[in-house]
Length: 182
Image (cartoon, rainbow, N blue to C red; front, side, top):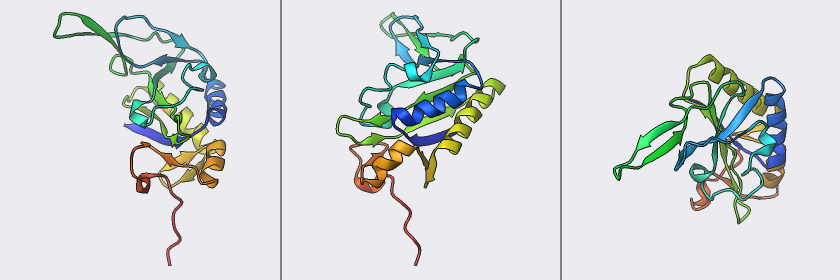
């Protein structure tokens, strides 16, 4: 799996979306398991419905989007349940030309929750998308330890704001500047 973890505010991500979308037309579709097979996609990162609402308190609970070339249809996978009903998955299993994007953001307590762009696919289209996101993040963000931090997120960090993957984790798991070795 190829992935890039980051901390970003919506304004930071708009720069990334502009860079990626200037190279290729893409669509963003909410990933997950749903009651209907209906697919709703947007064609610009700035239009993500969750981008400007409080993030979940844990990165694992944040909205995740399947990002694909705009000319590739999203495939929905039926999942039979033990009660005889059918649920529907939108994920990478039937969509190898995709990457996943969880943008993270501020939770309700102004803790900045990490985001991630990743792919489990070796398909050429997925590798190109992952590379486009990774290159934009690498060019526009600053690396701090294993994470990439957007300019606005960096201001929050430098003012003493908390950056973490889970707001309920102890603070020793938060992003911290590396200490100089004696």
